[in-house]
Amino acid sequence: MTWKNTFTTLIVALSTLILIQIGIIVQYGLGTILNPFGLIGFAGLIIFFIYIYFLNKAFEQNKQNNNLKNLEYVSYVFIALNIIPIVRSLFFITLSYQTFKVSIWLIPMLINIITIGLLIYSFILRKKTFGRFLKIKNDELVYDLESLKHKSFETDKQRLEVCKLCTNRTFDKNVGMVCSLTLAKPTFKSMCTDFNLDTKEYQKRVNEVIENGKNSKKKSVWAYNVTAIIVIRIIIKIIQSS
Image (cartoon, rainbow, N blue to C red):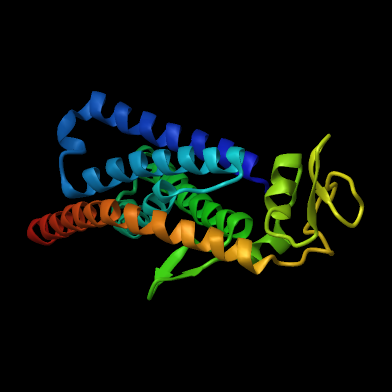
């Protein structure tokens, strides 16, 4: 299943869940979501929508950013928290013997399960396409070149990004960067078999990313702290209401 199909299905699934939430609010009032379970579900839908929006942009631009990283980690949390409403729905289904009442809980629950499955598949696609998120440990960057072996390159821009890290690159004043082996623009669709890493250029890129990572890390700390506080408060409310 391609990302385009996954993205479209997720949009439909999330939109359906939001419409169901709105329908429940219209019929039964705001009290239906102003509780720990309702808040978890609704907040999760918003987070998932934002995540797939940024992930789709990453696929379109063929690069990922720190926003995507933070959103994916937050999505992990909300996927875990959404297990609670699913279990709750199962509980109500087992207690209800009326077909209509069962369908009220069953349909959203099934869509929720499908959505979570598609989100997990999105994480896999993201990792397969872009590799692991860049990590900084002891001022050393884990730069995932391994992911290039699994990528497809459809445009000159994508191919030239690989060439910039290759010792076989050269410059032609008429056409720009070309391969020194063929004296032509690269045409590979999958990873070039003649790729030879330019360690100096690689280290230069690594240093740039480390510097950018240090700057963005300060911003990320605030995001993690806020998320942690929200999650802890939700858990406390769940415990108090049980």
